[in-house]
Image (cartoon, rainbow, N blue to C red):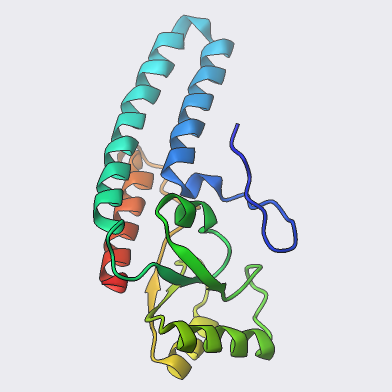
Length: 182
């Protein structure tokens, strides 16, 4: 129930959860499916989903308040995990360093990214915690841009106390973006 964005090659981007709006929709969809399969606990599934969506909506509102008026909106990301996030928070992804994780950019792609950064005077590159930052650091050395880390929330702890990892990660992403784009 989430329209998928497509990349330049027409491939569907699977990172829909990185948008808080999509995460809310997914939460509701999961609760509805569980309620349909387990009618005896349907109200609890729906109640829990509503509570979690309230937390997500609160964070989403805070993020809009703090990101909407930042002076810079252009970002360079490590790979294509952030189009949904960028769309939601009106950021412009000027370039992607690695189209596929583990696929080092070619010298021509590096040159093009460096030129985009210089032309647009972009000051921040965004790497991800689960990937090496070698290419991002090389681009940063050439351009003077700084490397920051944005987390696409693809991993988390499997512990009860980590129940709000997604919220924590998105709050951390907010702080990183505020610092990088001021």
